[in-house]
Amino acid sequence: MFRMKKTLFAIIFTSSIINIYAFDSGLTLGFKANMTGSLTRPHINKKDMEYLGADFMEGMLGYVTTGDAELTYIFDSIRFFHYKDASVFGGLGLSFNLGLGEGFSGQISGSTDTPVGLTRVYCRVYMTPVLKTGVLLKAFLLNNRMSINGGLGLSVPMDPHPTYEMYSNLTPEKLKIMKTTGVDFSGETGTLVVSQEQMKKINPVGYTLKLGLDYYQPVTGSMEIVLGSFLSYLIYKPGYVTMPKKIEEAAKAGGEVKGIDVNFARDPIKSFYMNSLDFGLNIGLIFKV
Image (tube, rainbow, N blue to C red; front, side):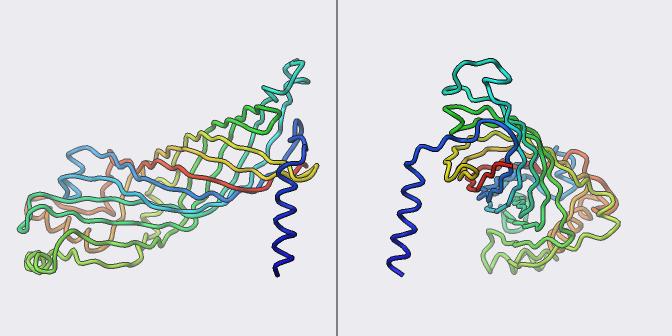
């Protein structure tokens, strides 16, 4: 076992110092694992927030993982841009990627006008799978050992039964007081059931703007290790909302007091955007095709 560890270390160390040039032109195929922090950034107007039964709405931070397959064609700077030296600018790459993994939506909503004062309800929703696709333009630098990336993409949640965690800032004593009004904010985990009718109404597509920085370490003449970081912003307007039964019942109860007929399956929430800021690291392998 000790000899195996020494051999593995020697291979990694040798591959990191040998002078193999990075891919400079042609078609490459890459596979990446993305470790992602996702910060939900909800946006909604005052009227629709009142319909939902909330005085305020904030985002939450979560962690998800995704995997990408990426096909890239590199246009080298000497052939296509007539540079004499590719040591600084190596060329441009056009990439098409397809990813599959997890999605996260976390929100804090609440009210200051309750029998127990300020009430915050936390809801974290996890979706699997989420399909992601997009186009990236890459500027290769320093003998193609590094690239700066920018592009646009689409994100499509495909999970009709996402799981959720719900809890509040209320003590057990305050939870009992709230239950006397017909509202139960005690913590729970469960599954959101999205009906076929709702799935037809909800907008399934979000739009993504993505920036990234990648470093390439050649291992052989036809394979590289890629290490990178990225920042992306997702703009997603669902049109209709789904939520845990307890929160929905609380919104309906609050609506009755205000004379509002609350029905989330029937009524669109036109001003609601469930945007998110995603950031993280990726690691993968790139192969010369």
